[in-house]
Length: 455
Ligand SMILES: [Zn+2]
Image (cartoon, rainbow, N blue to C red; front, side, top):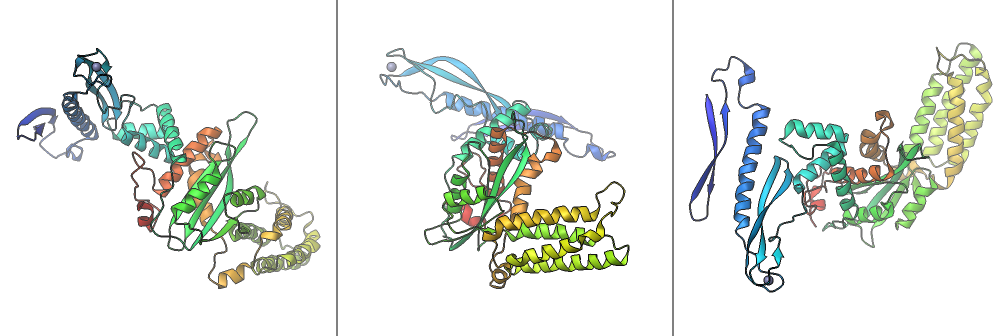
């Protein structure tokens, strides 16, 4: 069997114009399920054929428009035609448009309302950036080529260039202010590291964070340290985007880094940031696991292990209940019995648990000593229904940074490249990446998207 796909253009005056787009040959028996309907290759050809016809018709209509001379306002005549190659999601098209010469003064007009510098459509740029935000440039390029009749700009370098360009636009984008204001906002700021390809630097520091309101409004932000994006500007813009006003109560959480606390203060989050319980809990969890792994192969060790397991529990209780000053008591009690594990063998080639415990304990001790000013009574906050931290931060860091830029993927990043890609990833997460950037897409993660869409 065969089909002809014919495109019929209807004019305002009722006139019709036909063009055959494609002939499709398919078997008429269904013995092979692979013969059912169209193949991907045929689908791509069909889309490309439709695109060519529609673009050609649009160019024909556009070409009849005559500009007035900018110099003498005289009448313009067609001088010659120029082909403009434009990459679209449905293939490369050639837009054939006239150039004009003024009959009066001889001046040359390029044509009217045509962005002659454009080499691709915004929709293609946006999709390329969106996919590049989620997967490596090469994979994104392959994926687009698999799915769409994209025959231009499918080079990974092109995707990288367009993604960076969109990242730059997003960085300078103004905040979309919602109609509703937020009485309270929780701000979290954290940092993580990615591998660097810059000379003399092994890692790049990436700062990520989010702002959240009680009604569920949420925005994430991120920037590579020392790159061109000012994280303080991003924080202020995120606060505005979820409805900050002069009366909004701001609560901040961060990990122990003093640099992050300074950034928050500089961004106008002036209240003392609390140490995120999440960071403490992670360290305690680590300590508990090690304590439980200690050997109890003689009575002295069994007794010492029991003391350590109990003291780690007590340490947890003390930190949770705002008694960080007493943490030292627990740490000293653990140290006092640790000699029982001297000579403990690690299983196979792994380090002995007692050795790990010593290291983890030392790290926690140092951490708490430096952080005592930012530890609060987490239990009291929790009972009052207040936040003690945001485990979300870890998820945010994972989504924004690790899944695309992680060390395990063996990728090395330039400061600028990572920073601009991060702007696009944040926009994908926030649902603010749209073609033309004026359009706000429904965010995938936001349970209350209306606030973000308004404005
Ligand atoms: Zn003229």
